[in-house]
Amino acid sequence: MGNIESKKGKIMKKRVTFKLPKKKKKEEEEIVTGSFTDESNIITEYHERTIYNVKVLYKDGLVIPSEFNFLRLPMIPLQMCLKMMEPSELIDFSWCSKRTKEWAKSIKLKPSDFSLMFGEGAEINLRFDEYPGIEWRYHLNRALKFKNDDCFETRKLDGEDLSIGRRTEITGPQTTYHFIIIKLPTEPCFRAWIEHLCYILKSPVNNFLLLINSGNFHCKSLSETVDWFFNLQPSIEAFEIRLKEIYDEELKRALDRLRTTRNIILDFPSVDGFRHRNQTMFNTDHVVVRKAKWITIDNLLDMKNCLTIRILEPNFTDGILNLFIHKWVDGHFPHLEYFHFTIENEESVKFNANLFLEGIEYEHEDDCNRMFKRREDGDLTIWTHEGWHIRNKNGIEASVLTLDSEGSYYFVLFVWTEESIIATEDDELFEWP
Image: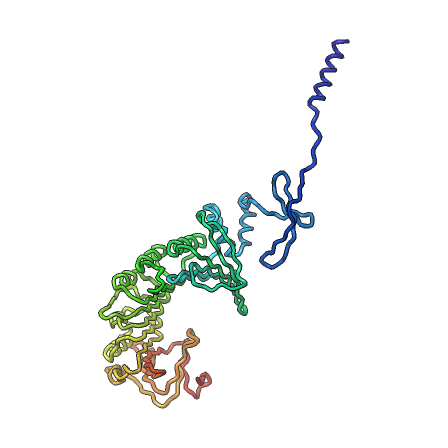
């Protein structure tokens, strides 16, 4: 019996030895009381406490999440959260890492308009069908004046502080969100941004304005920039080049790479002796060439697939116009709806209807007020009292018009289409200027 009691005593001692300690109360310490204002200007007051060495924000007894491991969400909830983000938020998210970049790409948010301006700084414009009436603009190194209500924030980029200004402009039904990014190396940053956005949005750029001013020359090489862009995508809807000075070989290499499907605008100084031609430069719907003394009849014939052609300050003669009109009559320009060139008024003495219509059948109309209007160009309306009406071999009618206005001379070939309105003052559709 004695041995049994001694064993029980040892067991009881062991039980006492392994008895769990009593739980201690959570250590809570209120550190600070403060407030913050969100984007809707709503002020939230909070208390910050430290619990087990973790800072927690409280409001009315509820925890305000200050940190959240977003990428640990399951796939479907994560995608749902990303789809709720606005485009600017999704773009910010995509820059965090390679993983967030792939997640942003998976959302398939494709812009309806993706436009660029590069030269004097850079600008990126985005519109989405899912957000009608809203535009997002990113300004990189642009000389913009800051406003009192601009909001600024600082982020880290490659270990350096990056200052970003945010601005919201509301004009009627249109809302524009501006993101002003300063103190960045423009050329490398611009390319990185475009490549990144094209990747995550899975969308080509629609419009590109390349603006080079000798006084503010951010684009180091015209041809290299154009080469880089058309290596990124094979063609673009609309491309515009504006130059203050030209370098023949640089410009020729850039023009050789141009591939547009809708619109091309060229604006650079005319230099004596400069000529350039390739088979694809003007293979597009709409052409505008300013300071066009370098444009030849061969360039015009390359525009055979255009819908509209606008040439300013060319070196045209009656002979060139006569050949152009003969080509239209023979069907060389099957899609042409509107051709127009403008020169200074003192040069108008070079043009004579008997010469530029030589060998072409026409009907001359005089002292008849007539309106010509293109529906696609809401602001393009021509009023004239004189015209020469011609037809091509397919029976399509067109009017040759000449006008003097504000020191300039205008020559117009206006093709009669179903979309155009041609009316005399006796017609109901006629509108007085």
